[in-house]
Image 1 (cartoon, rainbow, N blue to C red):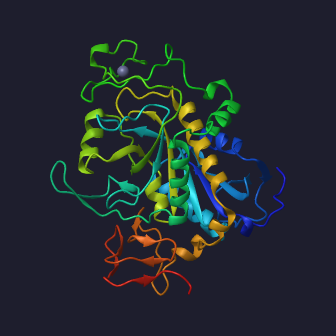
Image 2 (cartoon, helix red, strand yellow):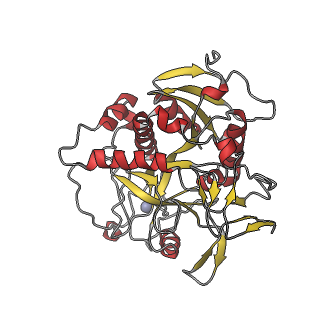
Image 3 (cartoon, protein in one colour):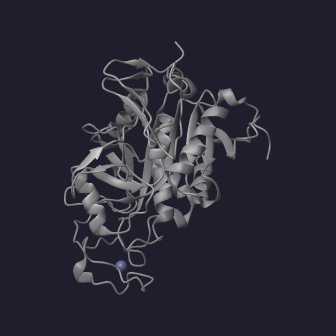
Length: 380
Ligand SMILES: [Zn+2]
């Protein structure tokens, strides 16, 4: 592979995939391929793929060797941050397990984007915290929200596609180019079925062909079923695969029924730097979960990410602090990684200021701050 004509410092946006098949589609989103990095420190275990989308130079990286979870994701993020010092934020793009309910009309092939909601920054780590009874959790997960600049572009895109007389959907065109396997699956061959939460799939059955159709949840038919809806809100991240309808709904309940989907990497990343998580819904996090919608889900998430990057002004990216500076605590030892987790207080990613009653805590019990005043986390 050729060497990129650009130095590492000329890359400003990261794009992280968890699976090689996600990276493959991510690469297809590039308007121009640059090749490999000019230099990579010997102890950086990531493989990078560089390129351009619109006016932005993008670094793509993938979790290696089929590893999944918040731990490996944190390592990829930390390497990325050290090697590409001018990265402002990253997009975490791939598949997730949907959490539909009566009020959340989430379908296979939809897109979920992490977005602050109530007191949540957009990501919750559901497997970390103190359980105070079945549905009550004392939260210990505080992640930095994506930079406001990035969120305002998300808002813009949201308005752009929901306005009356919405323009022709550009996302369609991008997905079409990927080819047939990424198209909306045939309704007869691979229907989008949602079963009642307490109806379990027969573990010996490979498909849902013999699952009880009486247990299906009837949903209204969408006007254009193959058009992906984009949902904005809370994504639940953790190191376990959620594959049980009852368990899924129980976790959702703990967060006031606000979870839109589950995934396994974001919690590891959000500690390291500001990032926006974009997930295509490939299953319903229940025992009927299969791989048939994966490709479609990867395609819609990737196409959304490309569209988002294309809408961002380069000047909007430049005003953001590079992550190397934004999150490294000044005067406080920056132990990024103790055990497999470290927690930051809610950080205003634009200014690098830790807001209000913030604390940084590691799993081994080291408590670094517990202050009600602001700390500056940059090199002012
Ligand atoms: Zn089934």
